[in-house]
Length: 542
Image 1: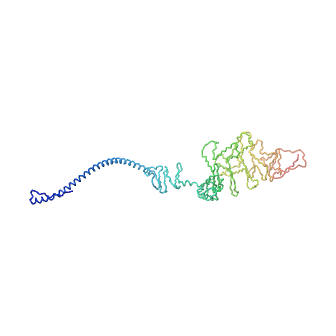
Image 2 (image 1 turned 45 degrees about the horizontal axis):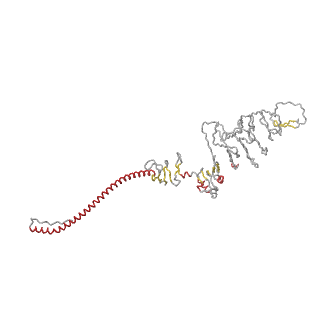
Image 3 (image 1 turned 30 degrees about the horizontal axis):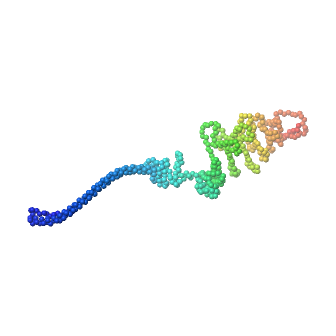
């Protein structure tokens, strides 16, 4: 609070009047001055009291400040430690983010070759392919899609060189009738499902018919496309499936059933084995084969155990023009090596007499219905056809003297294990009027039987049983010819119902006139033909 200034005090040098005026003014101002001075003193006293209070407060605040300073120092230390931890956390976060960034590469339009830092891809890395709309994962060698849609799910087979395909493409290698709604419960008509599967598969493809709770009800399935139906159960329980177009295959255990319902324009095999012996060397006698069937029959087995069986039911007619063969063997001789189209060998190593068990190399049975008469076609147990034309796909056969269509060769070390080269045994012995014969030739060869090159120890080329006969044709002229024009009949009589027929010159080894008187009436005459002229020779009973 300010104090008003006092007037100018009087001075000794002032004139009296001035001294008096100034003195009065000074005295008049002193009360106000004193009042103001007192007020100032009061104010100073109040201020001093307030200052003392504030000094106390300041002391207290200083003490508080010292405490806060201590706390601040502690917090600064804690903050420094937190800063260090935060720096470490930030570093760890940066490492974690980089690891995450290396694993999840974000959105891309195509498969990346490196990660986002340009480093090699990590196995398990992911990214979102914006082109196909799917997450793709790196498996260490290729990018694969991860999605529920099989068309964008990738598949890669194990092994070097395997390529990536879609799972849909892999699963569509097979078409199943189940894919088209087939039920197979023995009630539902599955024709449409089978037809749909057939229509969907590509030519040469495969259709799966899986096992079901009941038979498939299938009507007519149409088409000429060549496909294969794989039946996963015994087709005998669902025979209607054998009428499906194409090839029907069934594998149950070791049973393999095939049915073909379409013709092929070229040679075709349902089961084919190709063996190429493309090597040099080997061991004579060691057999290498495309197919070997080994069958062991134990003692006590009553079934007919056969190593191989081929049965053909031929309903084809002559008008079809097909040649249907149950078993066919073909060999093409391309060089000088020995060649067999078929070879059969049987070894009797029993070592004891076979009372009931025959040993037969080849048995051929030819049957015909007793009520069937057919003069148009042959029924042959063995039919051998040969040709002397240039070599074709058919094996050649020669009619030369050293080559034959049927050849018998006997090789043995003991005395005589075989009594006949060809043995024929017909049980009934009845001539049905069909002129049955062991050997019958209706061809036009140079000779029917040529034994001129043979050497027989008894000099008997042909031997017949006593009381049997050599029957000659009853019409026309039948000749008995010898190359030296000599015919010798020893110890027997040779007759025909037309007499004897000789060539133009009849020669006897020795002849002389007899001395016996002959009866005037002979018992009969023998008619002989010489150069077409008939001559009668009388003969007598004694």
